[in-house]
Length: 141
Image 1 (cartoon, rainbow, N blue to C red):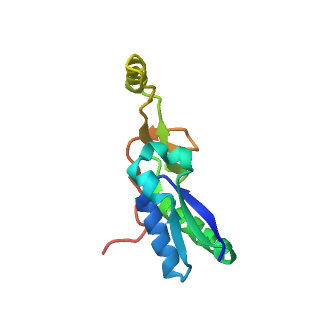
Image 2 (spheres, helix red, strand yellow; image 1 turned 120 degrees about the vertical axis):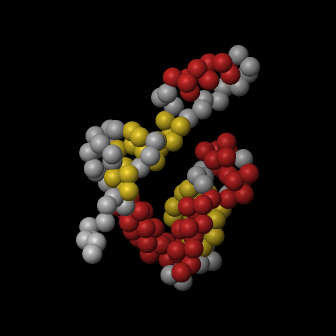
Image 3 (cartoon, rainbow, N blue to C red; image 1 turned 120 degrees about the horizontal axis):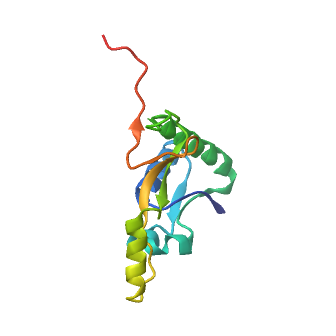
């Protein structure tokens, strides 16, 4: 059987959640480069992340399921400033302390730039450390 990548992850936790969801739907799948990324996260970009591999003939169905899973997850969180669901957890090197760390490590022959993870709103460009969970519309008795 020929397997193709349908989704890429930088962490094994969401990769296993997605793999479990596909297996519940009867789609045979496995994770490529999981050990490399888990043992040495610095190599994530070098190997292209953890790739979720599925059978070629089921790739479209798998992608649709994963896309819906991501859409459902994003719908549960909103921007703390504008209330939009168009937010995502991203890496940012913008804080002055991150740059100060990079400059100081430069003198010790290490060029690593530390980054922070923040929730970025693509509508109002607001960034925050925490995502706000969307309120349920159901009325409490």
